[in-house]
Structures are given as structure tokens and as C-alpha cells.
Image (cartoon, rainbow, N blue to C red; front, side):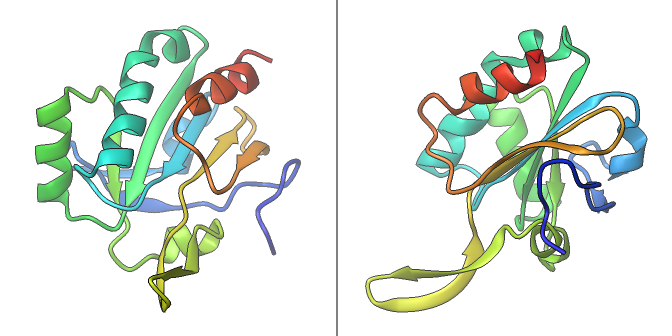
Length: 153
């Protein structure tokens, strides 16, 4: 079953950058901005994380929480969080199960070589656990404004 607007978001529990596990259920009653990104401390991923960081107050004032997900280790996440002052949890999806459940673990091609990797994607999940918006193949510039528009609606 594909993740789509109006459908129930797939449940998950992943290790988080605060040293605990985080589950979608932990945020019931709040809007969740779940974004998948390829790798900590790379150019595009850093810009995206910093954009979410800079919008954190506008998101939290609307009772929204941001969760970033990549295959990186918790140690990598903690370093990335600390280096850029990220005020939200980064979740480690080392086996790609959650990315797979959300359709963000996809076949990619670079220089003629095919491989599996994270497709930069964001899912806005309503307080009721239903998907409010799906953004695939995200372009970083302007993306947080798109997400804010959905959270505000």
C-alpha cells in the first residue's frame, strides 16, 4: 500500500538522536513533519536541516514536530545535530525499513550506475495519524515554505 494523502501513515519506532527510541505514536495529537534525507553533513541535507531549524518556531507554534530520518548512525546524527544546532530529533533508519514503508528507499542512478538510496521526501502527518501531504523528489530551495503552508492549513 503506497503512502498517500488521506491514508493512515505507517507506524514506526526508530532510535533517535536524544538516545531514546521515537515512535510515530509518541506524537499523537500533533502534526508530524517527517522528512527523509540521504546523508548527514552533506551540502543539500545540511541546507534542508538548517531550513527546518530556522523554521522551528513557526512550526512548533502550530503544534508541529519535525523528525529527520536517514540511514546514518546515531553517532553521526548527534554530531550533525550539535554542529548545526538542530532542535529536532534525527532518527536512524539503518536497515531502511521505515524509508521503504514510506516509499523513500528507491532505485537511483548516478553516472550510469544503479543503486538503492534515499529519495529526499517529506510527509506531513496530521494529529489524527492521517497523511496530509506528500512531497517526493524534494528540491531544498523553498521546500520549508511548502511544508509551512500545509501545516498552517
